[in-house]
Image (cartoon, rainbow, N blue to C red):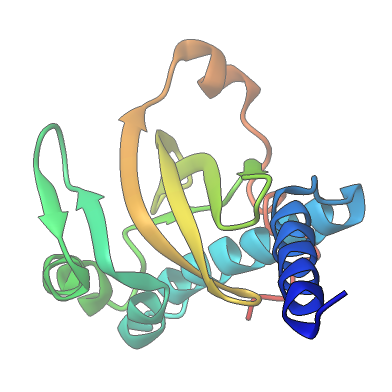
Length: 172
């Protein structure tokens, strides 16, 4: 066999192996690891509100993030979101708090979704958040889309006690 033919065959085999590795289903352990990372990121994001730390809030946002501030009122980009949310960080007490109660990760580990209840300063359930996260580097998740929605009566009745969504999670 000519060396050119061998190199072509070797290159073809390597490309095929790389393609197969990229499409291989992740192990259950890998999926659980990604879910833990997203939960920690979401809990760190929520903790930024409790700590009144707007800079930490900003670090969780993708540059091209899309946040909805009510029906059909999207904010485009990190700077716009931070400018709009600054008012929520100005008072000594947080006006609301949130925590995840469900996390799902795409099979390739690039995207994730988190959702959970939002409570007002009195601890009363007000609505539900849903966030889409993108893994921008290994273990580094940022929000690309965030939107709140009203709670159904079933969700109000079945809400977890406050603090259970981030219990035992070490926020990054």
